[in-house]
Length: 182
Image (cartoon, rainbow, N blue to C red; front, side, top):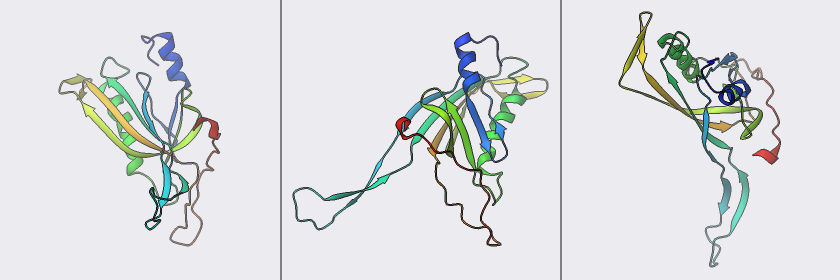
C-alpha cells in the first residue's frame, strides 16, 4: 500500500476486493478505482400487429447490471515500477485468455456502496491507454502513465453446461445479490 496517499484513499483501497477467478489472482491498485457509469435495461417483446396507437409491449425481464470502472497507474518508485505495473495489467488481461474449459471466468468485486457486497461479474471489455512518455527502472520500461477502463456485467446466474466428457462443469457457487442495491 502506498503510504503517500491520504488516509481516505488508503481506506478505500483497503476496502476494495478485485479478484480474477478461478485462479484467485488479485488486481492491485495504486490509487482507488472509480466506478464511472452504470447501466440497466428492460427487455420487452413488442407486438408487430396490434392495430393500436402505441405498440403493445410485454415485459420479459431485465438485462444484467453493467458497470464501467477505471483506474490509473503512474511509474513512480520502487513499488509501482514498470515491472509491477505490467505484471498487474497482464493479470487483468489473462482473464480473456488463461482459463480452462472447466471454469467460467469471473471477477469477484466489492467497492464502495455501489458494489457493497462481494459480487461476481463478467469482464466484458478492457481498454488500456498509455502516455507517450516512458519510465525506466531496474532495466525495465513502461509508459509513465497508464489508464485502465473496463466494462463489467453482473453474473449471478450461470448455465455452465457440460464439458466434452458429459460431466457438469465445475463452478464456484455464485453469490445471491440483494436486489435492493441493483
